[in-house]
Length: 133
Length: 445
Image 1 (cartoon, rainbow over the protein chains, first blue to last red):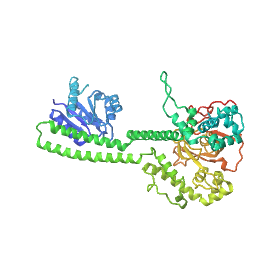
Image 2 (image 1 turned 90 degrees about the vertical axis):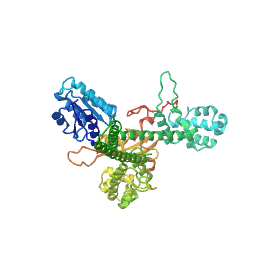
Image 3 (image 1 turned 45 degrees about the vertical axis):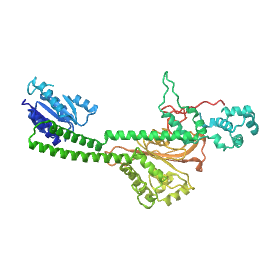
């Protein structure tokens, strides 16, 4: 496939597992663990799909997503949000912030891989950097 | 119906229980059967000699006829009725508690009535506990962080195990790495789960009966009759030892209260306070002037003294600027409510309306017989920590039974109060905020 995923997550063993699953499927996986500099990392790397954890050090995934959606370049970039908090209000917050897909932890590897593929296929139809969900 | 108006009902019940005919009882006390009939239907008030004669013939104390059931039991029944949750619904017959017959119920079946009150108290305590635990689940940062840690670890384990189980051929290095990750994560999960269970276990044990730290402190003080003799020697009572406070929050709250009480005991030694009381009576203004302390401090100090035959018992109520009660030392017949708001006519709240203005009032609790108390109150700002600190105010009320004071009071000087609106029979009260469960029926004569 040759497409790129930016994984914004701070748990080393989750990073390792997701990196392995996606790499073997042909993805280039880049990682970032700090919430405060996550938006800058997206600006720099411009991935096809972002996997974003909610509970990050220094800045929450919700804040990061809201900031991205206010930027023209990232307003429609596919974002898969991962969270251990699966309550209705968390899902509603994610939707209000503009999430493409919301997934609660723990998740199955197959399900996560399918969602990333689906988000990327939506993106590929609109061009590499101007992704749409 | 006021409890005094039910004297006739009680006479009728006692007579029926004894199997005495109305005419025979009337003859025995020297009145006509028709007049006794009017009395038994609460259409004529009685007292004095006739009440004593009827009580003698029925083999009971006159107060058993005039006062009936104990006031706390009656208030408990009325509160049980008001919090039953039963409401009339259109088209659906619902048996509502017959509140106007509460005293009759309590008088005829005191054991069952006490059980109803005890059950209602238990339900209320359990509801408070559920509320407290629910609040803890929603807002406790330790619990939230612990659950997040456990879920994150489970996520890593599930993904790693999924890879090892379904990924076919895996490079040996990757395999070794994932096995190591699994081992580390399983260790993390075990530690996290253990910490979580220990925490929940502590919560469960520490709050099995009392829902809030304030209630725990009150129960601790009540078990000591609100007297801490250690403070008279400048010592601190043991807050955590045998019979002490179980939760850190309650100990923290009690420590604040005890430190202030100890400082006040030091400023106002018991012997000097006793001397001032013997000269001026239990008057907080006399004590405050003699010792050069604030009125509220004098009130707290008077309420901290041990019981004595030489002075009346003294109750204390303290509230913050929002009106929430933060300390309750009840007296027989004057018990600040445990749950919900108190009567806004209390001098405590009147003082809160006018900070720094002392309030002294004779108040009458709406009970049978009516009980009068002398109450002193003042609202004072707490000492600010800095110029820009928010203004924090605290109101304090000291109260004592009037019949134990050498004091003449005219009826016009007495202010009617209640406990809380739901159990208060002052139907026309201008301060009423919700309907009463106590029905008042106009009397015929």
